[in-house]
Every structure is written in C-alpha cells, then in structure tokens.
Amino acid sequence: MTWYVLYTKPRQERKVADSLNATGIEAYCPLVTVVKQWSDRKKKVQVPLINSYVFVNIEEQKREDVFKVFGIVRYLFWLGKPAVVRAIEIEALQKSLEGIVASFEVSAIQKDTIYKIPEGPFQGFEGIVKNINATTIQLLLVDLGFFITLTR
Image (cartoon, rainbow, N blue to C red; front, side, top):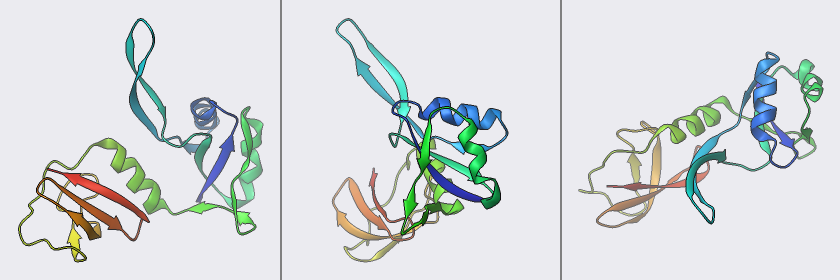
C-alpha cells in the first residue's frame, strides 16, 4: 500500500477523510487547533494543516475507488505520476502534531553541525543546526525536507 495525495474541494478535507475512512480506505487529514475570533467571542477550532489536501493509503490498482466519495477533485501529480508520500513522512507529520519537544541542552552545539533530537515527536531525527541562540535551535531535517525550531 502506498500513500497518495488527494486534492479536495475547498473546505471539504475533513468530510472527505471521514467518508474515506468510513468506506474502509485509510485516509489522513492533518489537523491543527487554532483560535478563531468572531465579533462576540473566541473559539478553538480544528482546521486542516494543509488546505485542500488529504493523504490516502491505498493500493495502486484501487486508486479509482476514492472517487466514489463526494468532494475529491483529483490526485496530486508530480512529474507526470501520482505524488507518493513515504510512510515515514506521514508518521513524522502525525508525531509532530502530537506535541512539542519539551527541552534541549544548548551546551557544545555549534552552527552547521549535526544535532540529534533527544526527545519529543521528532526523537531520533538528526538535523543540521542552522541557527542557535539561548532559547532556540533551528534545525534543517534533511530526511523530511523542512526546518523545525526547538524552543527551551
């Protein structure tokens, strides 16, 4: 089974993911909690981390089965083929949304060196130190292809 990326209609990400899961197709829509403010109140709501995208874990032969669900526009393509996301990247995304790194030590860390994350959702990942100060470290996680900032 392979993780693919689906492009959905606007504001349909959660409904698409729920419908796919209900039909037996594994789908993942990463959500984050944000505070929305209206004129009379503030409220915490969950919104998709990536607008109009849902990740689906399905076999190549069954890729067309997802179109039975309302709200899906198409698969995302890269270089003429359906975009594939590695399972380790999905797991890292899920872990990163679970929590934050509790703490780290700033002793003997220098810019442009390799730093192994000791705890938290990215535990065990190694990154190149790009920026460092008394309270934060900015790391480039080469395997995942993005920057993270660890805060003490």
